[in-house]
Image (cartoon, rainbow, N blue to C red; front, side, top):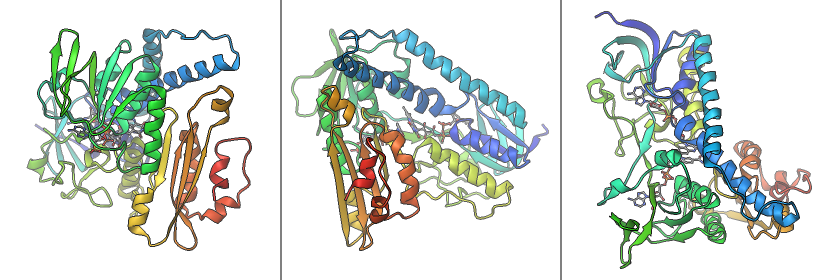
Length: 450
Ligand code: FAD
Ligand code: NDP
């Protein structure tokens, strides 16, 4: 069978794959992109986008409560039509799909709605047996949720199942203490569920600043989420009154209507023909890449979650764009700098973080100073809300270079981006202090700290 020839074949049409395809096409390359499922991958269909829609709804629920305390004529417990919310969410996602389809057409990227697997370093076989040949192959097949191997695990769902919910379950147990666990806990609680968060360690979000995550745990408890540390989930069983969650050293099972595992994600490397092509994996099963996204095989590159480097949409996109700038855009040194990547955990209020936690900074630098701003934001104070804001800055050296900014508070998701630029450019505390504040805002506290 004769193979169709391209410059680039991309496996996966999620955040990284689409970005690679579009950027390569913009440099004049002939591109084929294989995506057997919905365009946009995890982020658009079962990740960032529907999550943010649910977060925004949950945020509004909190603001309605504050509004009623400020004197607005809002019912004490305003009802929510989940079907309507889900319909608005899907409508928004349909719009993204349509814009991708149009862009694929406009840029001449050939979209093949099939799975692909490697036959060798320059040949991909599509699900229907068609063969494609290319100078470069980009693997951007993403990741999937991982469930712990315990009896009855099949009774529990993962984040994909959260997005399929048609109403808030009355009682939910969430296993995990990472990004997805705390985000889903906040949303489900705000939209009406009684939520128990089962964390195996002694803190939330390991890798984030410990003081900030302790405040986050306080916030969740303040809101009514039952946060339990040191909880090892042993088994799930179907009981008459719900799913029984058996915990280690706790005689009575926790009974709930729904269990969600948010226990990490594993790279999608199965069935890709990686062994046949000789592509090396790391100990965790992710595709091993160098700083330029090259795999161990010349001509095959990988970006995004499948490489397990900072599993975030903008990271997959940025890595893909730089890769294509290097291969087809005449920029031989283009590569992503993985240091100081900002991210936001969409809790209520959100947690934004860039750079080093205090613990990480102390392990790296001799001289570390930290600054804090703890306050009740104006809307909370006006509405008699109890949620506190905690901002923290971590500085290193005599000159107090800012090496970490951690913001837990209203609008932290929007505030952080600009400060992330400053941190990446090497800002010092004195330079932040030298910037005139914008008043009255929460953001001003960042330039007033010290
Ligand atoms: P994906 O977007 O997963 O795309 C991979 C694609 O490859 C899929 O569409 C899949 O169908 C396709 N594929 C798989 N195998 C094959 C094959 N053999 N051939 C062809 N195609 C194949 N990140 C953020 O930055 N902000 C957030 O707020 C955020 N929220 C999240 C919330 C949740 C619940 C989850 C699960 C993730 C969230 N993320 C967030 C992470 C983000 O979604 C991922 O980091 C991002 O989607 C990774 O992009 P990717 O291109 O590597 O993979
Ligand atoms: P995380 O790695 O963030 O968290 C996994 C959690 O599960 C940790 O608390 C971990 O505990 C715990 N865990 C792991 N295995 C077990 C087990 N067997 N039993 C009990 N607990 C366990 O993964 P997530 O699934 O939350 O999210 C995956 C990735 O997706 C994130 O790392 C992030 O990159 C991305 N994401 C980004 C978002 C954003 O940008 N807002 C939102 C959602 C996801 P321990 O710490 O003890 O290992």
